[in-house]
Image (cartoon, rainbow, N blue to C red; front, side, top):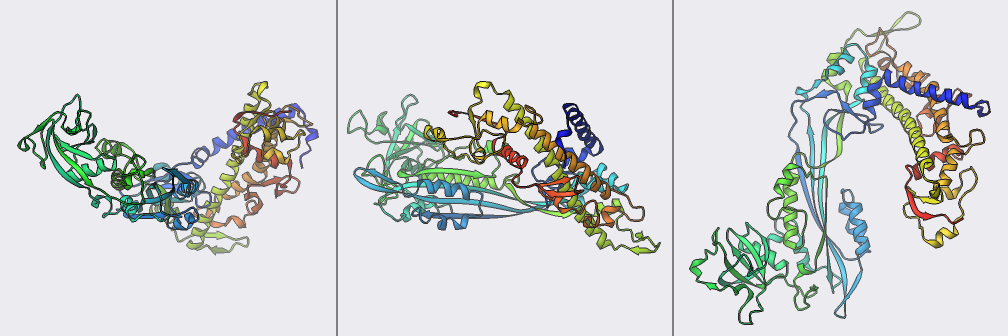
Length: 624
């Protein structure tokens, strides 16, 4: 155990200097490991990967082509009748990308009552989802090629550095998923979701597209750029039924086709007089002057139709006019997409009419579903949900470059006898030791990261103006804690240099700074940072370096050296498993690792780093 009483400030400065040199020396010796192993990357083909740590390494191999992936598409239409059945109704979507958001959103809105026109209406939901799973687009093994640097490491039998650089395994194939989910909310007097509503939001091939309006042709009429007879422009490229559905879903009762299949919507009554509908304010034309039903009706010519029937259901109401009962008029949609690429290809396609992620009607929802279906077929769409990995030892290029398959492999025992080491045993050792090496590197790097965070956090606290010392800090692990006046007035924050239970829920700038800098030996200095630094130094010198040195030793009689000839559990310098735990620290007195006592002040102060660092100052202040 370190006796802190023996340290003066001069020795502390020396230790800081030594620690800086130590870090720099590590970067010089295996800078590839520090720079690449701990760079978190998006998993991609041929990138190195560690199963035990989840770390994605750089790519040490290239590939010329990929196998053709298989795509699976799933669609669901789920009705939510009450907040009591949400979890049960959403069971089919529990493994989906959107499950948490769906449950939270619907749980908040479900079973809310709305009073309109003296009647009570229920809030109901229908969930429409579309999901794509692209199964394993794999790199073609015949086209794989090791990078020059990786190949050189294997040719000189430097397996240790190869694994630190390239990882224990490599990603051979990737599985991606993309998902679109729409929550359709509507009001109803019934406690049961209408079958009509289900049809309106149905995303299948027999969904909204087959629900048609009934319309009657009213004739050919003039139009004017300055004052449109039908004021609501929907878009171009519309056929008769599509235009009618779009206008109906927006609450209009007349629509017209003009020019090159342009769609316009409007009302019939007009301020000109009851006998002159709005669509006729510029006058009527002979039928022969409008090419109704053709691809080009004619400039400033409207083929006008009246909507005479629509999707009607008595228990669905409209917020505009109680006498109208169009289901779609009571709907609101909340749409989210997960893992769908929105790059150049998507941007270009979204310029086309109807291609967007916004739906204000049932028809537009259908168009969103169709648009997402097309985008999901793009090879770059989807977020990576799983990868198929293969140990490097099974890569043909690895075996050739390293000459690992040599049969004349032996290890001299102490009595001079030659004991054979099987190829299978050497492969097993390499795989296990490579994952172990990744784990040790990750633990050591996490300790360094913890030191840097503590140092930066303390610096930021010290830089805060003195008038903010009583301001509360945001608690990242408990964002729901109340800050109302009643709660603040009842608070009693800790005042000693010891961590107290209240510190894990509330802390001020001054309080956290005191905990991080107050110490009977070194008052006002970065005490927490120093203590973490001492831990790292002990861990580095007592376990990390001895173990790494033992693993990296060459063995002239064995291809792969100690990495292939011995398992890490057989190495005295490496088999201390307490050193592999997050709370494991090296004890110089014991000569081995031990677990840091759970109630230890340093462990509690390190926990506060996760709660409050980096510090975000709130407006609320602590009332002394």
